[in-house]
Image 1: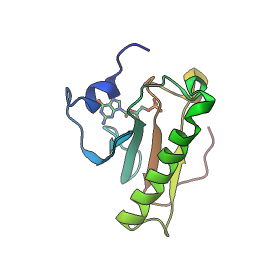
Image 2: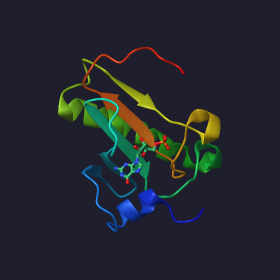
Image 3: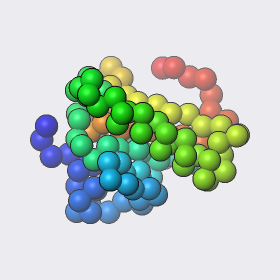
Image 4: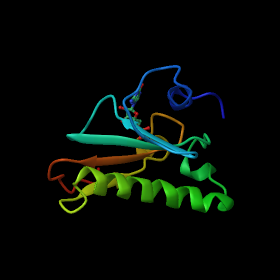
Length: 114
Ligand code: 5GP
């Protein structure tokens, strides 16, 4: 895929409020938060959408989910709760074509499915 906005954040070419990083993932606060906590968990390997992740990368998707859960535990809102969300392509509302998982928390979220 072509170079993405999130690849530029990973390379520190544009600033972001980074809250977690390891060898395969980075997480930073969303620039337009939809909840008091809104963090994006992003694989460093730039798959455009979930459709582009090969079977061999199943572990990466697991790490993405577990990194978000670990963050929720560390930050103290795992028990009160949070929402994980991944948009795919136009109808899913995806705007940045570098796979990412939204973590939303900090208030009771309505059960809205578009
Ligand atoms: P999507 O709509 O693709 O699922 O989510 C993309 C998210 O990236 C949006 O929630 C949007 O606010 C966020 N975003 C877009 N540009 C930037 C940026 O430059 N920095 C950060 N931190 N977030 C961004």
